[in-house]
Length: 335
Image (tube, rainbow, N blue to C red):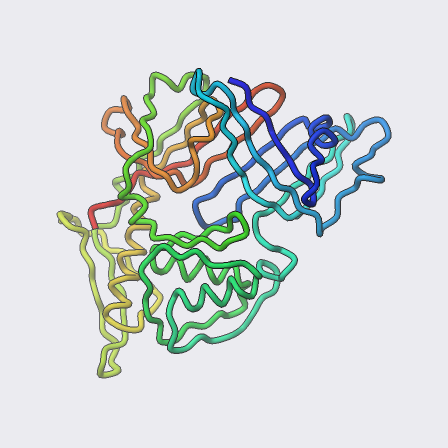
């Protein structure tokens, strides 16, 4: 297999200028909770061009693609778009002299993930809030989930990005910034999709190629949350996982607005907790098929077999070696 990194710098084809100095490339594709990142390590010896005439600035941006050929063997050339990344930090090192250029997929020049805001949203919906936040950032919203009414919610000292993440987390939604869009989707809905492929333990190879952590003994069987009833009194709602008879109860400290709101937040909190109880990391030969927010089957891991959701995929290339490192969790689809 042959892999090639293709780059554009401020919409210009600077492929040779950058890749001729490139020592390593890393693209982290996250399903939710964090912005995607791009990191380039470039040689800066000789005339130190990356700290002189070609020194990047905070307003610069990089677009990246990974192109593969003969993977799988005999397959035509494929080109995957990593995204558009605004420069976030520069690190200069010596000796030998190198520069590390890091970028984020979020529109940092709008204050989207910098400016802390204080405001209250009333008589609104999840989609309306996220649409307004996306508009403030100058990007459209792509919303693939059910909408829900919200009577009142306060953005207290949070950036628009962190507030958007917290709203989504409360209702079991994922959020990521990709291709100049705010993408929001129902995580449970995506976990119920078919697996794109099967990863067999015997085909992984290499040292420290996989790690699976099983903490099922810490799983909660139920979740309890308080909410405001129609009479104005504070009531409690308990959701028990189907088929579960254990006594471990999770208590959600945040108060819900109504019984419906309590149901949604309780299930979201329980699912989030269960997802942390069986996780895996797997490093494979580089393959752009593995992206965040898709499912794969793990096979030949005994009782750890099953369908897993990719929380992040890190594509890295250094020298001639190209790898894809996955962070996964076993899916929760019983409620």
